[in-house]
Amino acid sequence: MHPLDRRLWYVLREPFLTTRDEDGWNIPLLVWRADEPLLAVGTAPLGGGIGVRRWVVNATVPMSYDRDDPAAHLAELADGLGLAGPGVGLLTGVDVAEAVARADSGVRVWATVGLGTPVWAAAPAPAPAAQRVGTVNIVVYVPARLGEAALVNAVATATEAKAQAIWELGLAATGTPTDAVTVLCPADGEPAAYGGPRSTWGAPLARAVHAAVRAGGVGTVVPWSDRRAG
Image (tube, rainbow, N blue to C red):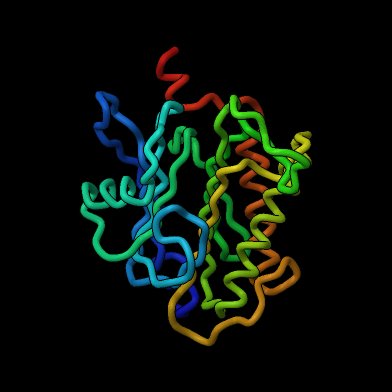
């Protein structure tokens, strides 16, 4: 087997769906495990920034969620799952069982798409306080080592592709106030220098993110806790 094939299929495993008991509810989580440490960049509450990571958790929370320590909460969830070492944790009001997966030229993307609070990034004034919570969480795996600048550029590329998909869905917005993105890649190998939308890895990344967000944003996404309450 070619080394790149191994990186493509075995370094970051497919996510598995599980649940947790919290506040009397059985709440879903989506969990990715890595067979070996991965280099990651992202904006997640837990494990954001640049560093080596071993797992990713995307956790559904009720729309009434009001904890002001999301990183600590996610660390508790990871501990309960037996996830060792540093990882990435994200939160969303969307049912993570509805994650959309897309792939392009070896790049894999998973997105949970909640567009209840679409906003322009450069809004002319603060948004009103009473709004629906909405979050687009994007997890990306690139099967080749990216340099640090390329990793940062890959986050920008994913965000641009997300904004394009949202615009094509007919929303006057670039995202929501709480979106998060994480890009992971092997921690070894010759680092690729670029992650922009016309680069070797940035181009398929952009296409896969665009396809996942568009597919996830079609129709009405009912928050998990709203649907549970009927």
